[in-house]
Image 1 (spheres, rainbow, N blue to C red):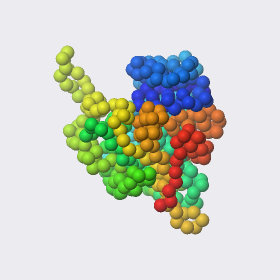
Image 2: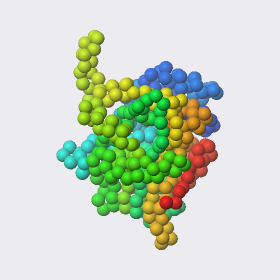
Image 3: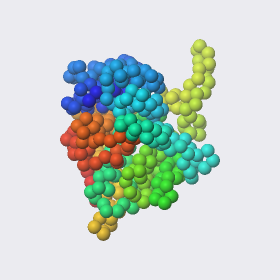
Amino acid sequence: MRVLLVGAGGVGTAITRIAARRPFLDLLVVADYDGARAEAAVAALADAGSRFRAERVDAGDETAVARLLARHGCDVLLNATDPRFVMPLFRAARAAGAGYVDMAMSLSRPHPERPYEECGVKLGDEQFALAEEWEKAGALALVGMGVEPGLSDVFARYAADELFDTIEEIGIRDGANLTVDGYDFAPSFSIWTTIEECLNPPVVYEAGRGWFTTPPFSEPEVFDFPEGIGPVECVNVEHEEVLLVPRWVGARRVTFKYGLGGEFIETLKTLHRLGLDRTEPVTVSGPDGPVAVSPRDVVAACLPDPATLGERMHGKTCAGTWVRGTKDGAPREVYLYHVVDNQWSMAEYGCQAVVWQTAVNPVVALELLATGAWSGTGVLGPEAFPARPFLDLLTAYGSPWGVREQ
């Protein structure tokens, strides 16, 4: 398999280090707007050889991306950029006749009059609108294939296939006990993406009602996370799983709740009050005259790069799927989870836990596609495929998962 990886940030770099240990890849082209960053990602690999190459490309330039795919004869485009570039890369892959995999889906837009009650444009709507085109071409776009969304969706499919007869509720629950030395506020993932998903109206799914929205940070609950993380308060956050799971898995209710913590939530609310979460450029004075800048990009530039925090970071992160329903006529409730210890991921891969946990899943998926264990056409989420091959291979990568009866 020949893959074009667009994005050589924290997750992209982790992908290269994981993929370098697997033989299924014939070629991985690592491309980034910052060519030096792509070159550094490849240079850090001990035995890169001819299987890894670095290129410079603008993710927003569909023509340039399509040409790069064609020049290297790539079978698949793996998108490791932020969600702003989903649609240009999605279209470039289709134009080049390549497959496509991402870890976050096309952006949403709130309902203009009732943002905290009704959905406007939902996450992934732009991609699913082109599903028929991909299907007719016999091509596959595997969307939402990170950890959340991604592994969490695989857990939902596994629960439906092997653990339950009927499902009342599927709730993605994400929590951690990570700390970062020397910083009062240092997100472990892209602040651009974090602002987008945390300040947008969260989406909930209910059978008979469909998708609807609530105010940000609504329905707080305390969830007890495994492997020493313990109780963390979680709140509703907009996330792709709620838009993906109901398309393939039967459940009466689907939610996503994130363990953010009170201080983190207050910081995000302050950014919103000050208008610093906006993406539309504002004009500020510069040494050479007025300059148009996005407030959100300024916030991101002022914070440390999450990929560089690993040496200062301590603790574990947990991604998982809580499921409630029945099995053999009796009530059942389980939590399927995947925990990564930052000390382990730094020692083993030189990557902090959150980016490593995100990165391992698309590599597993690519290997399943390369071997034919997964196959399909159209625009499909992870729950459209059998779960067991994925979970078995994830364990073979040295990263086991667990099931806890609640």
